[in-house]
Length: 473
Image: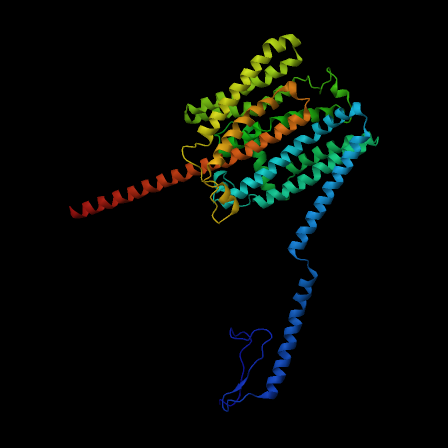
């Protein structure tokens, strides 16, 4: 009964590893049957080689992820160098008299989307830090399970970084080579593509996230409901992008009136010129949205601090409209009367906003813990608990607040490179602000949760005491 060959079943967990020799025992004599062993070993090794040949060949054909990443980086640098070279050569082809106007118009069409691209990159960094620091931003903003992670945000920013400068390079090249109609079509096609992607109704291009953004913007424009954290958070970001909306209005105005790739817009009586009354109204819109949100919050909660917050946003209105008066009053009157008022209103707005950032939005009654990552990291070592971080944030916030007042000034809009740099710095200031504003909200949510849990524990203890007293009676 025990004299036959014994082999392990094919599904046995004790099967040999691939490449090892199988051993078959005769339990009666304890000797290995060599003939059977050789046949069995040969067949198993042949099958192993056949089964392993397919994945090995497939793996050999696929390049490594590091090689692919290096290839993408190389292509990105080649693309960036090509855009810079073509753009520079196109600008140099223009005459010296028209070169500034040429660059001014190109920046007007493309700097809004370039600033938005910068904001998307920095927002991805914000989300990465939150994920490393165990700050549940999805819970804070009430996001669903399909919300975008920092990697997906960076993927969107990468495509924006490629598409927008490519369109700008095509515009510069075509315009400088005399293809004016084709050059004029470049910003129009780009703007239409952005709008179509935002409103595309099919489940591609992150449909739920796009519609979440559109719903939030709609709630900001019409604050007819209770204001959520995401509502006023996005509205605060929009105040840092007032210049984007101003340039968008002027760009769309030129597209509608067919003034793209022309210099007719530069005339004082032009509908889309620098003297247009629409410019200060568009600049002030984000502040008005935030102002009415604060009034809505006061109606819902009755907290007087919301009225003080509304007053803060109202201080931006004189800065914008006093500056715009330069185009509608005599120069002497502007220099002697309106410009001092503009300076005073700018200082008041900057100091008030700085005070509110530090004491209300950040609530720095204790040092922040946002840079304490869950795993050891070089950024956590450099930033967490370092006093210079807080001095830097407060000092840069004050300086950039004042610089932002400069950018809001309508009479300075022709210094397009300076204004673009100041607008980019304001976006960087808002990027810093996001860290501590979100952390402050996260700390408030945790404190409320702890209070609710403690109250629940106290209630349970009281119930136990009541039950025990009744039992004793």
